[in-house]
Length: 554
Ligand code: DGJ
Image (cartoon, rainbow, N blue to C red; front, side, top):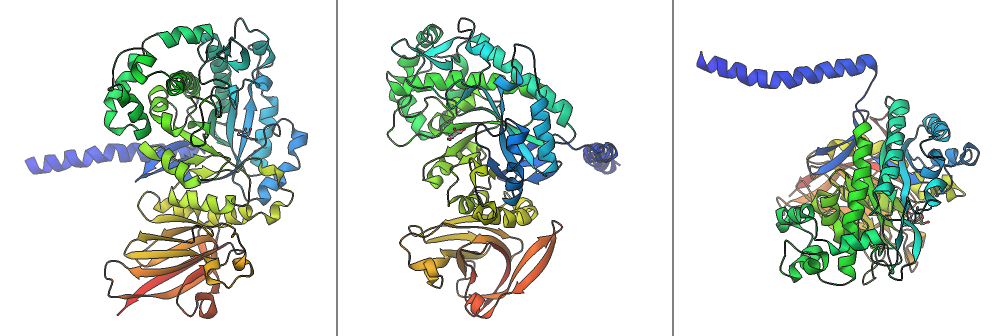
């Protein structure tokens, strides 16, 4: 009897959530509603869930002034479709939505959202509020013109710049209220459709032309003790702080009380930490206010700093940069993640830094150059990122020829396969060029050696001094079964669990997914196309999906 009642308790513990989930499902189906877009963990990966399915953002960001009229956007929509994008990253401008204090105008935004729907595109809205590339150029005129109420930062010479100071409550409240109205409006008009799937709060926050603000409000704060909230966070996370920040805090012996300079020393690095704290608090308050009405995922982005460059002088000081990650996490718990914008090389270096402490990777901007197709595949594969977006995508004159569109086409087809296997060590991305010709990794029992297809010397351009980048995503779907989507790769294999066995290629098919799931074979690849069973390959000018099976023989 006792046993039976234990079993019943056990069953009912599971039955309740299952029942309520089922009920919820029925309700959703009945009302045609899906859950609001949100982030969800699957194994080690963070997925963006849109309409109850994991969604990979195959995106592109618009130039800063494009999303300002229907007329200007008209010829752009077909380009975005030709690029096979599923998401457009587009600004929403404070100055346009709140032209007079408390008077909101969402007409243009509504029309643009309608157009996005017609073009089957999701939107990540970029809130150009208090800051856009450090500056406050998108603040409405009633803010800009009332410097007494909405104070600016000052540099070390006491000169004002067109940058709202993060130390003013008036500034914060004005921004926050507009943001909240925006989120209310999106909830009201898009709460069922979910065309808007995520929000970037502000844009490339950071202080210029000095490492810290020297306005009256800022100077007062700078003389005060470091807030206990920050110090408690640092104490609690002492063992897991990023090493470059831990080193700074450690220099004066990990002090847990005192002014900014007493704890972190004097100099630009302390000025930057100080700014990062107050910027993150400000952005966090804006995000919290927005999420209180409509909790879409919200993130912030950063202009990266070149090595040895000085905060405030050569890059915006205090933004959500890797060396300030701990400060931003402490000050911005409501912010879902920090994102890098790429305008100089070293993608791997920065992505490695940004994926510390479980920060999910999303790349909202990358210079629209000839590397983006390969990098999209690589970052979605290797970092299992939420998405990728080159900047100013509409600038392409011939979108039908863009490698990006070809790459997005194959990744899009493979998306259900990718998302089903995320976070379980089943996916890998590769990025190869003349300097990095080969990469070795393990999936299941197999070691993969993947080389740039030009290493074979078969393709015309393989004798050129520089090689266009190659990139691909591999997905392991069975013990011996794999898919690869991308271009410019040649793969060979070893059996790691039993090295005395040889690995053979049983089958390679080139194909496509139809209706989102049915695998349709276009060609069986063998003979010259697999070097008589020696390798699996896609040439650089091809963008394709291959399914292949391996086997072992002695
Ligand atoms: C990064 C910014 O975030 C973008 O809005 C844009 O200004 C680019 N830089 C450069 O054009």
